[in-house]
Image (cartoon, rainbow, N blue to C red; front, side):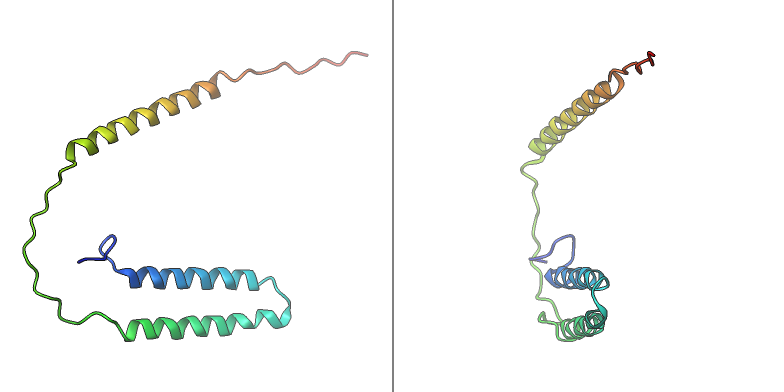
Length: 115
């Protein structure tokens, strides 16, 4: 499964980018004048056509190539946990500093009215 992220290929990300941009464009055009609002219909139809073309004409073959057994070895196992421990310590230290700054924030007295 080369070229996949989180178990999905590039096509899913292309479709997600397409629909996010179409929805953003539709939201922006919803505040436009009367005639520009109707272009939302054409944008949605265009996105539907592009989506159907991308779904109906896949580039990958239906039958995957025979897989060769690959032994996966994590060579950076210890370094990853050292990095995780360091980042956790920095996060907890920063959280402690923010909370002490929040708790120790001075409260100023309101001025009295003097006539």
